[in-house]
Length: 231
Image (cartoon, rainbow, N blue to C red; front, side, top):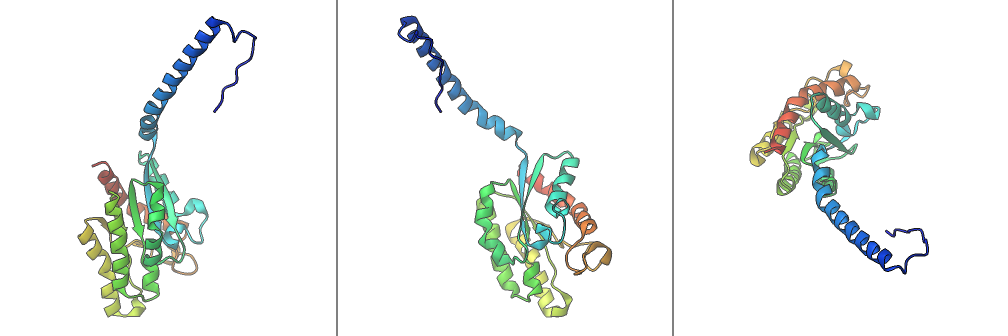
């Protein structure tokens, strides 16, 4: 950056040169102090950031953006007196493999904590539960390596895939939570699944009312997550 001063024809005056040198020294000192002081001040004033990585349930499929779960969750946390920003890292159609493949990039947002909502599409497609476990296992290892507390949102397999598949799939999330010592919210769609008044016409994705129910149910677990951030 260059500073341009008006020329009054006195640059050759020794007193002017001495004043100019003194002014440059003062400016340099002030600039150095700003570099030292500003970053901590900005950090102190910044909200805690939660990265919510997921599929269409996180992305807000079929909803106006203001009704998407990350947006409603942020509003609920602010109402509860928390200075928190929730980043919507949901991609419709994503599987656990898809979420894992973009997790490193998502961490470039430098969050303070992570909510993982992945696996619903694995279940809908009848993918091998062990593959789902391995994908989420690696993702949680990455979060742990970054020093990030995690809230893991569980899913349940569709009943039409049979009890054997259902038992194997439904066990994925408790196994992961135990292995990685993360907070487990057992079923992301608790109170909403199979209830027509809380779902869109596809009977899969929550409507605005359903999103509110999910946020209300999720809040205690998210507040526990924030406590882990402050440890």
